[in-house]
Length: 522
Ligand code: NDP
Image (cartoon, rainbow, N blue to C red; front, side, top):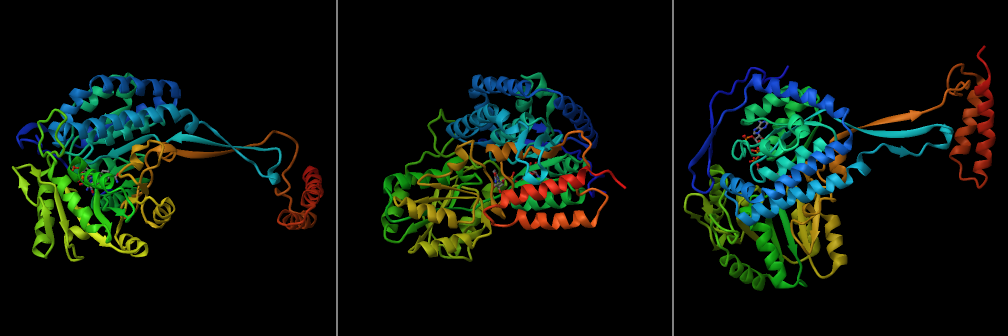
């Protein structure tokens, strides 16, 4: 029995503009009745999808892509209003990112989802093996507020392409109410197959209690653990895309200008509210002073604003509670002796100045906890071994970047890091290639989105072995006889021998077994 079956959600949830803080609209959370209806419709849609050829699903996703492309400025307006991100962050990470991912999925779905022919071993001669990649049925996607469009669209339509009905639960902070439906409605098949559930964590718990066939969660590690506990009771498989504290490691032989540019963007894009933001910048001690000076100079050039036309660099902090966390992390570090080289303060009610911090010690919260804000905490290191050991000692393991002209060294460090993805001489770029799997390890979660693995994650594999009708009784079927036992004994010997005439020996033993198989019972 689920502990949440009696929960009711009656209080409306305010959705505020992240730029002005003013109320934009109120959200009525879905209660148990709506959850039941969503699932009833989703089960029907899942049945319909099982009978719908892939081409129709591909065509439906292409219709949505066209609509997103043609309406992108209006979509950017909505995203910016609810998240407070800059127009460029919205256009590139949300719109371009979605179109890029969907196009890759549409283009590769046939190859990835088709029945797979699997080799059959010599001991099963005459038979054929296949794997069918079948949809789960109803997928539940629980999404966070930092990329409300990208995460909603790529997961929902990826799952749909693989043949699933989807229920999407956006964050109450950035529900984009009505926008996602408007887009899904462009294709009637998607309209019937992908539904949006509104509400907070309670609604999410009710959705889980209704037993989706698989859960995909993107959000904090804390919430991920709660979801896993609930899913465990119901034995629902779940994939977890969780928090990060990503490191950027800069060796002494880099091009300083480019690498400083990478650090500034990697730490501050989306105002640092990305799971893969650079949250620990390690600089080799021989270039540390020069690097930090250049870093501060570049950070101070950034335009912090919204209401932009594509020419602002840093947007607002989406949620008030997130701004409080950022402030607490900076003040905690300041009080314990960190140096704030630039920034370190709010700007108005909803922005935080991009901040460079040095002299960080392990007792400071920002050293090990995810900050999720526009901070660049800078560290010094002197050897490769030391920096690898230090970065691997943290609980998170999402992505990292390694910067060096020496690609042999960079690749060696990439292998040594306990993370799910590494960009070499670039930053946050593994997720820029839709063909690369994306996900973390340790407290950053498990499972992979994107690429072949990501599409297959929306399916379960069914193994099929095909034999023909004949009068042969398999040698390992009844009756067991001493003679068959001896032949099997011999078979094991010849199968696993290194003898140069193994095949000949195998043929002789095989024939003997076949002779036994053909003998009628009794
Ligand atoms: P949260 O974990 O707070 O929320 C994520 C989603 O879970 C929201 O829809 C939320 O609803 C819902 N939720 C809250 N409580 C529960 C519950 N008890 N049971 C089920 N669902 C619940 O994350 P944030 O929205 O604050 O997102 C920021 C976090 O997401 C960061 O840690 C970031 O690193 C991570 N993230 C990870 C990514 C990755 O790919 N690894 C990508 C992007 C972000 P509601 O908001 O309505 O309360």
